[in-house]
Amino acid sequence: MTPEQNERLTRVEGPAPMGAMMREHFWIPFALDSQLEAGGAPRRIRLLGKDYAAFRAEDGRIGFLDERCPHRGASLVLARTEGCELRCIFHGWKIDVTGQVTEAATHTPNAEEFAARIKMRRYPVHEAGALLWVYLGDGPLPPLPDMPFTRVPREHVWVSATHVACNWLQGVEGTLDSAHVGTLHRSWIERSVAGGQTTIGGALTMLAPSYEVEATGYGLRAAALRPQADGTTFVRVTEHIVPFVSIVPSTNTEDGNFFIACPVDDTHHILFWGHYSPTEPMNINTTRVQLHLNDPEVDVTNLGRFHGDRDNNWAQDRAAMAQGHFSGFTSTLLQEDVVVQLSMGPIADRTLDHLSSSDVAVARLRALLLRAVEQHGQGAYPLTGGPLPSYAEVQPVNVVMPEGGDWRTLRDNVPA
Ligand code: FES
Ligand SMILES: [Fe+2]
Image 1 (cartoon, rainbow, N blue to C red):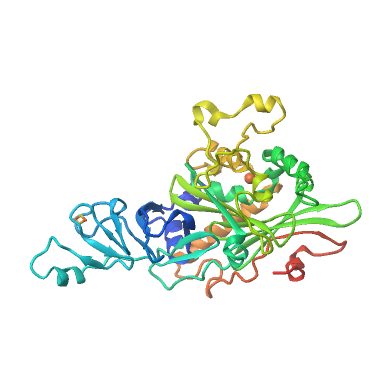
Image 2: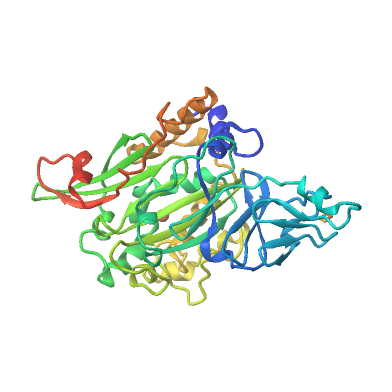
């Protein structure tokens, strides 16, 4: 990895090619669906280094607009929500969810005619998987995020957000590195095992696997393979949809976790982490969710929060470690991920890495992202080089594979 490649992979603000590729070709999740209340206050949303104002009108429609009022630039995050429109608090201009200025009382004569001529840019929004997604590009709309967690009923998805003050790629790479699960999250796995929540999942993830990776039209599939004494192999396949969505199987193939490291700017991302199930409702009280939390005051809008910073080692609890906790971050499983990513600095210097065999998915992802950016620069669709990618095949897997099996074919045998 050269410094230039590191720069190309991480920078998303302004004209950076990675940011431009994300803007043009992908829906970007920006908030939990519960974070925009009908008729409630607008929220400031920062994506790819630019600020926006998002609000939900009284009728449920969502407006996603540039933050700047088209009159003289006051923040529309300060605006009043009046019915289905925003009213700027500076001079009272009114703007609807489509970005149309509907009142400009500062102008005479013919205020109506004047207002009708002013339209803000409105960005398309899509609700799926308990998240709100936006398309910021100028091109034709990319394929909708049609993935295992967006196909189940809304009440079968639980999702949280965590604000992390480091580059988005650190967040993504953490999701493609199952080698850390048995160490960093050791105490949470022990808790899952003790809670009876795992049969072949948690206990076995502590054994060192070998990794194989297969590139797909949308990203990659990373298999962690753990051969067993009886000739079978315990297989866990994580799906990664370029550039920022990873879907990890649960203790079975049908249910899963998803992680999305949404790029806020060069040195911040939001990590969305959720659980889904086609068969069971999921919420904060579901056992599967509760097993990863140990904080009665947990805040789903900033789940992996911690107290302190680098100066106090992010409040690592050495007393808990002395009593057996592995990492010393005891509030939520996600806190452990967030702290290790932050500890690498605002933008990790990958030229200093020494990748091992367990990092094959990380290495492959970096290569895929560099290729995707290059293809975008040449006017081609990232990864496919031509047609829009299909997400129909995305399917994480967690099974015991019989002797002589091929993990690449497993998704054909499991229910979608
Ligand atoms: S700046 Fe918004 S109405 Fe004047
Ligand atoms: Fe993790």
